[in-house]
Length: 282
Image (cartoon, rainbow, N blue to C red; front, side):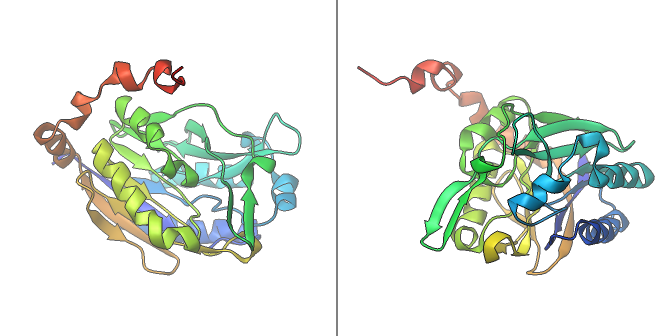
């Protein structure tokens, strides 16, 4: 069988970076003991706090304590890590990037994805969040080869933009990671539905490690980290606590799904992936 064992780590991080890294390490060890080859962490797994906190410790990639810890863990345990997201200094004053790094089994950084879509919303009269006020948006769609399979990278709010996932699928992505800190308010209605939709329409496995617990401004995150197959079935889901799920995903099943229903071969690329489609008609 052509299989990979993937893990999704669910955490409830705080403003204490050292404690967060200890928790991540403990849960990743649990994943390794269950045979995980690729471990996915949640968005902002290393720190949850206000803008001032992120700006204070955000540094260059090669100076970050979380990066050093993950490099060592990957190399020591011979696992790949899709490292949720970590804030780094950006070229724009007063802003950080929201960055997912991918480490290979030698502890080397193999890919970097900066979150494209920023969460600028007013969910209700008590909760407004403007990520664009302190995060510099990325510009690139990113895929990376791990264990001979193309992996797609996204972060949280990206999930609401299907064109990003279609672009990754057209680049050959077969497994897409969605580290997130989905709010309870939106998560209870949209999280699983959107994840299953992205899996079905792109005939990919989706691995979604999420935060659970209190986020910024007393907002609760939804959790329910899960792994979904290319048919849209939820194969594994975390309980409402810090936990890790590890699952063997069958790449032959993915190929069989694509062969039986070759939707990706039927895309009108010239119509929908052309600038003309976005032009207003006169």
